[in-house]
Amino acid sequence: MTVWGIGGKWLLWSLLASAPVVVCAAVFRESLVVTAISPWWFYGAGIAILLAGIPFWFISAITLRKAHQAETLCTSGVFALCRNPIYAAWILFLVPGFVLFFRNPLLLAIPFIMYVVLRLVLPGEEAWLAEKYGEAYRDYSKRVARILPYARRKSPMTDD
Image 1 (cartoon, rainbow, N blue to C red):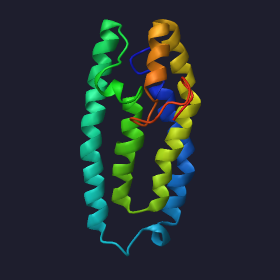
Image 2 (cartoon, helix red, strand yellow):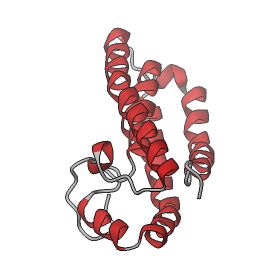
Image 3 (cartoon, rainbow, N blue to C red):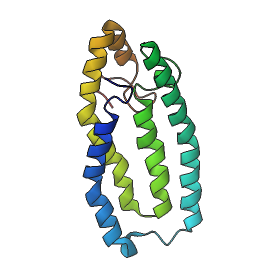
């Protein structure tokens, strides 16, 4: 598996699954855009979320790239917070921060769709990691949640 893992597949399926939401948000834009609250609240919140998410994503990507080049398993730094911090950055920070600029609550369904798609395609990557790193990955997956940092673990490779 490449350094990209299941990222391409996840992105493609997320885009396809989110398309109906985007179409509905565009068609019903006039009735869905929040106008009762100043747009600057949405812009400010979006910027704040993006300012938290961009460094989280960048640090995750650099850490993963270094570990992939060294052919080692990432378990420290942001990877001690969650096993998939790059996907977490997109779902928890980058996409929500970006869609807030549109002031359309329907678009906030996109990160949830991305999460569901990730839950469907991630087992392939996890199986590959378990095969490549064996017991080290299985122990890591017992200690660290998939996506939500600090989420309590229920069972290996099956929670959040």
